[in-house]
Image (tube, rainbow, N blue to C red; front, side, top):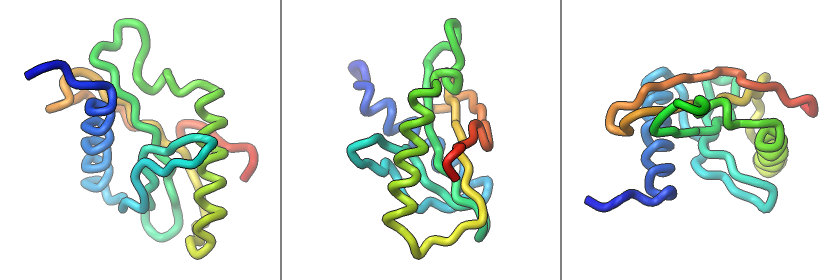
Length: 126
């Protein structure tokens, strides 16, 4: 089999992360939510009170940095703005809390090493 494209690897990683989180009780609201300001890989709810905006990052090797460390301040700002856009477009969703999680995957995507950072960063605008 030839080399996977970045898009294919990203889709595999996101699908793996979604299944991982569903097995831990989260429910998917949206996948790859896009608007002009950015994209959020997964939007999931935990229970009836919390919505989680989830960024999935994959690195085959962690010799330079971990996958989750690549979510820098610029990316965080884009995620917050995109989350605000999503919530404004879905006013029927009423959650008591909003959080931003990062799922870091590394190694072989058939059986990756997983790091789940719940509440990885805060949005000052909520």
